[in-house]
Length: 352
Image (cartoon, rainbow, N blue to C red):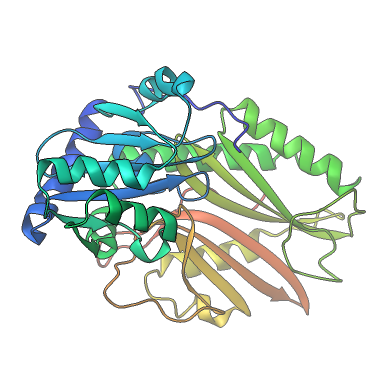
């Protein structure tokens, strides 16, 4: 469950931007012969519905039904008391409340066209109960996976999406300046989280490697842990549905990390060519293709992605660089350039 403020801003996410995204989606649906599209959302897979409507769930789950003709409808497994809040923070024609969201979504689509061709984003990850209810609500509906169609629409970020990611990166950057070079991990993490929420972050998750000399793995900490002379924090920050990650290494002796950060930035600049990143002991590129906001796209420990799925141009990159035998962790969001142009970081992983 999220704890930050979720509020819609017409200045940051205008209706015209959402309308343009829907128009692009409907054009793609028409080309693919789809009568309707269904997108699932919950607090761990909010990105698809958020991109189309601005809706970000605090909890529970919902299905967005987008007919090729007509306005989107959000079918939610939430009580009626949150209806006005959903309408205030999203752009949909109607909000339907029911405990069986798949059943109601299927019925609504079938009421318009009993044998409709329906694309389901992330169909393979849809809960079996919801998929069964879709089939029960519309027995003659033809369900197909629309993940590739949706990923291609999302691959090129529009200016509004870039602006929101840049704002999320700024929040993460400013929050990380609150890191103290001494003290216990719990206090440091609390300071960073408080700073991010004061700037409007919807959510922030902190992972830490409290003593890089002993273990360079980033993980959620339970209880208070002493910090070593070198430690790292990773902040995963959400703002208006846009998620980024920022990783910083901290040295107790204030050791300069500018040169190491520049090596990381140069490797990121080469994306989508991963040759320079592959020279590091470990690396990871994450981004949003469909509904998961920070999906693993490429990395030293994951299999190469399917060629059919395009690489989005808004990504978050992490890498480990070993300096004189000691690990240094860096990570930052980045925007890939047009063909022939370098990618650039949206926030610096080094301290100013």
